[in-house]
Length: 158
Image (cartoon, rainbow, N blue to C red; front, side, top):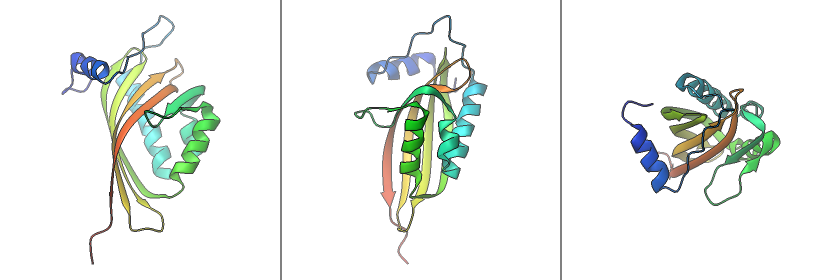
């Protein structure tokens, strides 16, 4: 748990945004902050390298990846790989940062930000978002839901 966030704040955010934290079953292996950090490091490495294969390898074969609130999720490692291949093709010089906010049962919540240049344009994109992640016992992500805000800017005038 991030020192600035209590379980009640995370629960409040989940309830007021319509998110329901999944129930913890006896079959679930509790997620640790260290395990979530390790997974986020893998995600960071995959995104910064624009490596769709390594990104897909972070997920279970039947995982869901919902990158926008009102669109259907990408399903399975092939669906996730196809999505990553498409969206990272035009990204250059990706920088990704994250902060673990909460870990409970098999669920983790993280704040993240990213910045990258758009290939062959003067545009820089900045993203600021939140992940809601559910993990399987083997440490792979079985569900990723994210919410993000985009800021785009041209380079400074010369």
